[in-house]
Amino acid sequence: MQHVGNLAASIGYAMKEASAALRGAMDDALRPLELSVPQYSSLEVLGQHPGLSAAELARRTFVTRQSMQGVLQGLAARGLLTRPAAAPQGRALPTELTADGRALLRRASRAVAEVEHRMLDGLSADDQRRLHRDLVRCAEALRSGRARSGPALTSPGEEETPGRVAVFTRRAGHTEGGTRDH
Amino acid sequence: MQHVGNLAASIGYAMKEASAALRGAMDDALRPLELSVPQYSSLEVLGQHPGLSAAELARRTFVTRQSMQGVLQGLAARGLLTRPAAAPQGRALPTELTADGRALLRRASRAVAEVEHRMLDGLSADDQRRLHRDLVRCAEALRSGRARSGPALTSPGEEETPGRVAVFTRRAGHTEGGTRDH
DNA sequence: TGCTGCATGTCAGGATGCTGACATGTGGTC
DNA sequence: GACCACATGTCAGCATCCTGACATGCAGCA
Image 1 (cartoon, protein in one colour):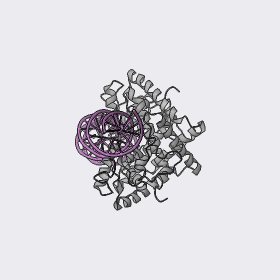
Image 2: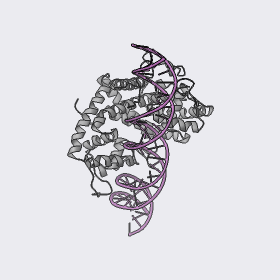
Image 3: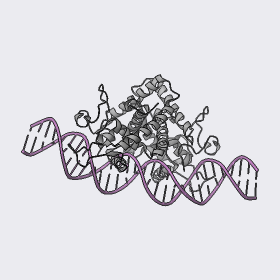
Image 4: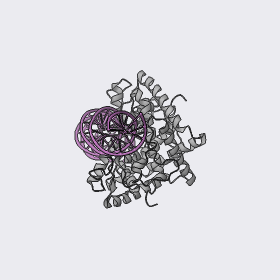
């Protein structure tokens, strides 16, 4: 290995290209609903894991918790989610979708699913499985090299924790994951 | 298809995850050189295609040309590249790397190549080829659905145009690519 | 020749995201 | 109990990036 060389052959470049295309297509699909991609991502994660804290939500949507603040404020101002004024325990404020939030999420989720379907239309089922597997592997390999490890969404083996109970119970393996301070 | 469903199974989510991890790792690798990812991307593209206009550069690095302005100004202020005050033809200002720019690019390129190598370490050569192919396919499939089609970096068949000559000669297939106005 | 389409550069405004830093609450340890 | 590591929420400042809009230059066509 010496340097990047031919960009057209670089997988990193291709990943950026695909990711940018996906981001743009999602932007277009979500524009009619007046949702940005980070806003949609938050709703989606929150729909599957009610009661998550802002920091945990930030890790799962790949932004800093500082950025998540703004996102949540925007969504809360539109009545799509609620956060308690005081923390019931510790400092974490468990966030919940409102009925409006769930309704909008359903529409947004359909729109995004259509985008994803279009993206994968030309790939066989096997190719799709492989693609998913390899993307996850790439992410893991990159995280392992960083000083502060990443989200570690699903620990190796366990299946999709419900979220609400996971806020304070999943303590192991957190070294300020995903986004970093300092 | 109805909605996104399980996030852990979503290829779009995995792509975002991998892309975020790559972005973060590149940030870390480039920080010692005081280069941001967009700045590095511009240098890299410019190294392989001297004389590109800012707008063309923007398409190839997946940002808007407005954002590219700021990036180029920063790099020019550090003496890493030069832009003529007046356009030799049309409105496009051909951008060139300076000797300092090329030297820094070499170091940055090595650092990024190491990141990419770490990312792909666990994948076989076949898997890497397939991953690259499928990422490009995903990007193309997404672009084809948008009103304004994308960069179309390398037209099907032709090999890596030298750039300088391509500024004004590659007219076909451009419907305000990549990033959109209005 | 004049008109139209298109691409480039550029300005303005705002949204988003990041780094840095600090205070607070919790749990484990001495 | 005191202390320490760690996580959360939050404020401030800055960089990046977007949408919208406008003027300019080139090519094609009536």
